[in-house]
Image (cartoon, rainbow over all chains, first blue to last red; front, side, top):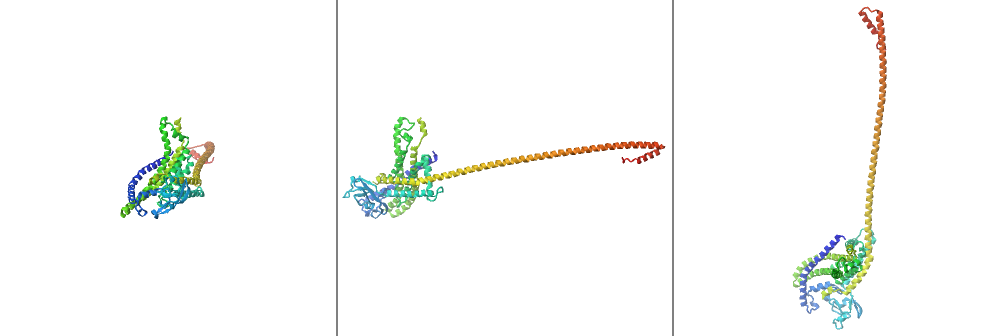
Length: 381
Length: 169
């Protein structure tokens, strides 16, 4: 295998690992005041009504932005906020399917049709308005949430963009790329040559190209869209564990179903290893089989979520200081803005790197499952 | 609570993600990736073909040039050979002509010398004969005049000598 792509991948991975503590370090000092503010706000707002909800709660704000929500928050707070209502779809094993607008919940203050929004989660309520846990267990929430809507937007962008690019190829066969086509071609070639060919091998890579390209561009575009602070961006799609779980699961299934004899042999009976070592090694290898997609899931989730938390923390800082004195708020805003601009540039890089890392590692795992290792065959004999 | 919702995968999102990913994957694979990758491969192949063709053409040109040079070299060598032959022939002819001319000249000279010798011999014989005849005539006159004195003898000799025209053969 070529050495260069391997080195590059190692560098990127090392970079990702080195950046992680940096994120953590930057996060902590700002999380602390945020938490303090939360505590202060909570103390003031013990029996807080909407009128008093002027107190700034950074922790709550950050978490709300990172978590998924029913309805797409645009501006404002509480009753006065502007929210794009999204469809709520609930399948209740007892009551069947119900579909209504998320605006019916009135930001979690009203129950509708026996359902209520409680801290971002749909629960069943009885006639008196108390939460009915038994009925809640029957609920399957299939709502088009902010993340689902954002995901669908990304999917539509992907479809329009790449079917358009494919048309450009059909229209101008054999000619140099033009416009969007020339923007996308180097990235497609990068995924093909530096990811698929180097990790899977020049003979078998073609079968996995559609998956790798789809995953790469989905993650990349979702990451970029997440960097836009207002609608249609701002959703934390790739920083949502459900999304990364699904992607990692697909990679896991592809790897598992494409594993050849050699791959399974390697897991359950590592060639050239004494039998007593296998007692230890085989459980480790089996664990590794599941650990690989698990790490894929966590890495993407954590990296993107961390980026969102940092950007929001910097902005929260302005309001935390602003709460003590207006001058401090304005003073901090300059610093915060500078840091956020820097972080956004870093996040642009991270958006590409994480898409690359996810795709490259998926390709590596697929490559490992398909590998015909001749060295071990020799050691078997 | 919020943290828990952050790391707890929501069922709805997994459902929609799986569904939309499946549909988009199918559509992209069929209508985008396949034609894009095919066109890229075709274009790369055509570029590769063009490059290899150009290389082949260049090699052919180089071969042609080499063979041209070889031909030129052969032609030049042949010309040299021809020129040399011509020069040799010319030299030989000149030499032959010289030899022949010399031989002829020698022959002519020999003949001339022979003639001269013959003429000389004839002349000498003539002179000898005349001298002999004169001597005889002189002797005859002397004897006839009965020579008295030395002066008379001398005058006689002179007279005879004057009469004798040596130049007339």
